[in-house]
Amino acid sequence: MPLSTGDTPALMLGPLLRHVDPVSATVWVETDRPCEVEVLGRTVRTFRVGGHFYALVLVEDLEPGSTTPYEVRLDGARVWPEESSPFPPSRIRTPGRPGPFRLAFGSCRYAALTTVDVTEGIPPDALDAYAERVASQPEDEWPDALVLLGDQVYADELTTATRSWLGLRRGEQVPEDGQVQGMEEYTRLYAESWSDPQVRWLLSTIPSSMVFDDHEMIDDWNTSAAWRRKTTATDWWDERIAGGLVSYWVYQHLGNLSPQELAQNTTWQAVQALAADADAEPVLREMALAADRDPHTVRWSYVRHWGEARLLMVDSRAGRVLDEQARRMVDDEEFAWIEAAMRQAVEDGVEHLLIGTSLPWLLPHAIDSIERWNEALAVRHEGRPLGRLAEALRQAADLEHWAAFGHSFDRLATALLAVARGEHGRAPSTAVVLSGDVHHAYAAEVVDPGGLAARVHQLTVSPLHNQAPHPIRVGFRIGWSRWARRLTGTIARMARVRPTSVEWAKAAGPYFGNQVGELVLDGRQARFVLHVSDHRPDGDDGLHQVLDLPLAGTAADTAGDTTAGTMAGRTADPVPAATAPAG
Image (tube, rainbow, N blue to C red):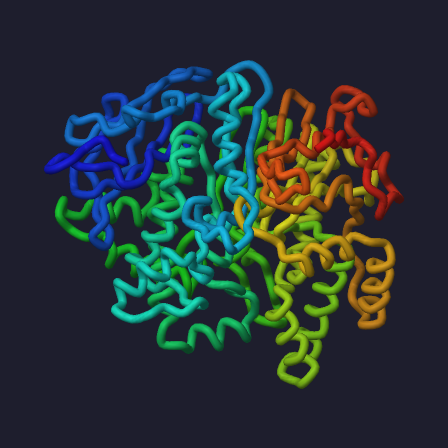
C-alpha cells in the first residue's frame, strides 16, 4: 500500500529501475494524480496518458561501479520505500564493479501469484521466489540486470479477478475467453502483474530490459499474411493494437531507451512538449497505429551496453515482413541495423555478445524441421488447397519461430558465424541467443561449422509464471529425440526443404515448471544457471537450482581460445558439462 493518503499523491506502480549505464539511470513510476516526482534530487513532472499519470526520472552524474540507495518523493513526500517494507533499500548499482556480471532472464509471466486462481494448478511464481532469494543474499551476489523476453502481460488470457473487473467496467459478464481492449483495460494487466511486493522490490533494484511477444497483443500476432488479413479486417483490431502498443510504449519501451535515445526519440519529445494538463494518448495512439501499419515508423529493437557484455534486443514480432514469397522476421533495413550493431560490439572488444529475441532461434530439431516444412508448403502452394492447409496448421500449432522464417534464420546464422570466426576483429568468447516463449528451458550449441573462435549458444527460459500442459511437455521431449528428428527430417527432405545452414546439439534440458535463468559472465568465462519451481512429489515446490552449465572458459578450453568445434558431429546427445544439483 502507498505511504500517502488523502490529498497527497500516491505511488500506484513502481518504482522500476530501467536503463542503467556507468554514469546515469532512469526510474519509472505511475502515480494516482499529476505531481512532481523526485529521485536523488532530480525532479520531473508527470505526464498523462488516458487519465493515468507517469514519470521517467533521469538520474545523472553517478559514479561508475557505485551503489546508491534512493527514495521516491511525490510533491516532496516520501512514498518509497514503504515504511513496513521487509526488503533491503532500493538502490542504483552502476556497471564497473569488480567480479562477475550476472544477468537474470526469463519470459511469459501470467499475472502474479496472488491474482491467479489456485484451481488453475500453475506452479509457484518463479519471479516472486527469485526476488525473495535475491533479497536474502549479499548485494555482491545480486544480478546486475534482468531481461524479460516477452509476455509480461497476457491480453488474451485473463484471470478470474480481471474478468470480474472488466464485467463491472463494461456492464456485462465477460466470458472465460474474454480479452482486454484499449489502453485503460491494459493498465489493469500491468497493475495485476507488477503490484506484488516481491517483484515490485526486484524491479526497483535490478535494472530491467524488456521486449514484447504475442500475448501482449493477441495470440499468433503477425504469424502470417493470411492471419493479418483476417485479423486487421475486424472492427476491433485498431482498438486492440492501439491499446497494446500504447501501453507497451509507456510501461516497457520507454524505460528501454538510453538518455541519448530519449533525447532523439520523436514520440517522447512530442509527449514532453505537451501542456502540463494535456493527455498524451492521442499522440501515442497515432504512433501505435502507424507502427502497426508501417513497421518502419518505430524501431522497437535496442542495445544495452554492459562493459564486456552487450545485449542486442531484437523485435521478432512487430517488424515482420509477411508477404508469403518474401517472409522475414525483420525487414532488410532493420536486419542491416542488427548486423551493424553486432560488428560494432566486436570492434568495441566485448567478450560476450548477447542477442535477445522472444522466439528461440535454435529449436528442438524435430520442431525446427516441421516449421521449415510448413513454410515451404505455404510458400510453394500459396492460394491453393495445400497452401491453405499448411496455413491452418501454422496457426493451429504456432509454427512461427525463426525456423519458419528460413531466410531470416540463415541471415542471423551468417551474422553470428561471422562474429564467431573473428571476421570483424577479435572474436568474443561467446555469442549467446537468449529467448523464451516455448514454456520449457534448454541450452543448445552450434556444432557445425566447427573451428569457431567463439562458442555460439541458444539459451531458452520460459515461463516465469505459467504452465505447459502435459501433452505439450510430451511434445517437446519428443521434439528433442533422435527418432523424431529422423522422421521429421525425412518429411522435410521429401518436400525438398533446404537443409539448415548450421547444426546444433542440445547441451541441457528440457526442463519444465516455472523458471528463472542466470547468465554469469566473468572475463571470458560464462555459465548458465537455471532455477525452477514446480509441483514436486515431496511437496517442496519452491525455487531449486537444477543446472549449472559452463558455456565458455571451462577446463576444456584454453584461455582466449574457446572452440565450439570440439562438439562437431554430436548432433543429438546432451553435452555432459552441466551439473544438476539433487532435488
